[in-house]
Image (tube, rainbow, N blue to C red; front, side, top):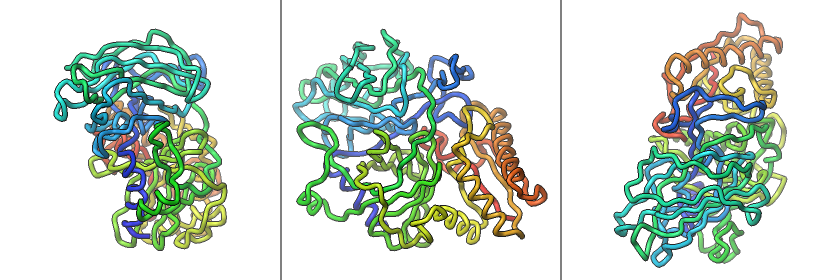
Amino acid sequence: MNNNSFLGVVLICLMAISCNLFDKQDNGGADSNSASTPESTATPLRDDTDTSVIADTNYLSFASGAALLKFPIPDSMQFSSHNILDGGSAFWLSREGEATNQEFVIALPGETTFKRFSFINGSDYYGEGSNAKDILVEVSNTSADSGFQKILETSLPNDIDPNELFAATSEIPARYLKFTVKNSISNPQRVSLGEIKGYGIQKVSESLNGLTGTYRAVDQDEKSLKWKDFTPEEMKGAGSYSDIFIRQNGTGLIGCEEQGEFDYFTGGIDGNVAQLLWHYVPDDPIKNVVTSFADNGKYMFVVPINEEGNASSFSAFQKVSETPGLCPNIKGFDQDGSSNSKLQESLDKTGRAVVYGINFDFNSDKIRDESKTVLEEIVKILKDNEGWKMVVEGHTDNVGGERFNQELSERRAASVLGYLTKAGIDASRLSSAGYGYSKPVASNETELGRARNRRVELLKQ
């Protein structure tokens, strides 16, 4: 598949809606996706149960798995509604004449209890006084359409400090958050917002399963403002278009686009957020893509990341079949060993492979059981290539300090090595090393970039 094909997929969604998704904050090391919130730089604490984490994590972000299910049609692609979740400098701007009661509904990957919020202004450049003023925040544990209860109602100053925190008036567990921008500071024609961020407790769950299948691009309905299927006429007018085929094996993901002659992607999922390495055509640089799944895998949101670690575009897909099509560039795609073939291929050709899908407990070197399938693929490769020696490398983001991340990366790499030796690989063939955040593959200045930097790499010797 060539670059034009994938760009066509992205443009489908961008033509009707607009750009840019995901963003996460966390303070505590390799599990974090951003610097700490203004309120605290302390090490995150666990709740009374092992299924919740109290941390300075922004749960209203692409990188943490939040996804828009309903949102205003923006002024243009440049000012997409999705900019409020991307963690970058872009902002949302309403269409002219739509400056009041602009409603957003966000799906959360796990039951979340919000304790505080912060906001970032949009811009007056395209209309003086257009920054958001009065805000209403509601949550629901029922559905995206009902059961909402108010947890915050406030007014934002025109010169709002992004470090200012607004406390929730009620702490209600929820799977959906709705916030309404009631009006602007003084502009009767437009209203704008840069970012909404929410902090509190979110239940930790196993990574999403059942993602194998075919995903097809969706558009935004002008009346309901929700996702809808493209009509045949719309698809014809949208130009180039491809389904996306995915096969999941444990926490490992592999797939391609329908029309791809060369393209394929590999990666791994943690929770409902996947890190993908997308190969388009031979000898082209690999594209870094963050993919989030909402509504138990019904929706798939694709966010390519640029060199600065920001979302470069956004496209949305809906699952239309439990069966994926063919990926001719992936050996054995119809079999469970297809991801193994690409891992082996990467080590054969380059002597190195980036591995996503080896997931650890929060701020810990304990490998989660769900990672077993990905680890067993490495075991099989080592058993099939008895002459190989391997270095297991651990890498983190920059949150939590140099010493913390260095030690955590070393312990995590050693944990992977320990798994491999217990699985029958001779210890003399293996070694491990931790690099903390000294070798980033993306900018550590953004939440999406930090998410990419938390990884395991294999080096063949």
